[in-house]
Length: 88
Image 1 (cartoon, one colour):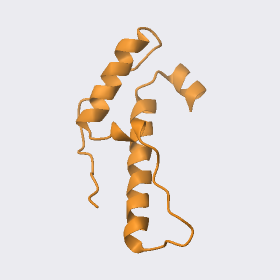
Image 2: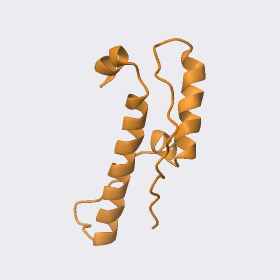
Image 3: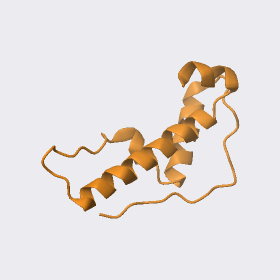
Image 4: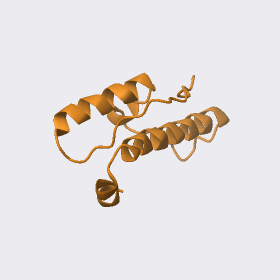
């Protein structure tokens, strides 16, 4: 199983202040797609059964958690401070 590590991007989205939500939603989806993180919005998180503890599955779960963390924080980072405190 391969893991994808997003590249560092210098261009960020402008802060979202609450107007024109649909347009903003499409911009965020496109931005996350360019970072190869959009799939974490649509897929369920990985799970490991209690009896299965092999290292490959644990590494895959750790990679999933890390990329999910990045995805959520890219979204939160693009919010205005007044919206960030409500949604965090």
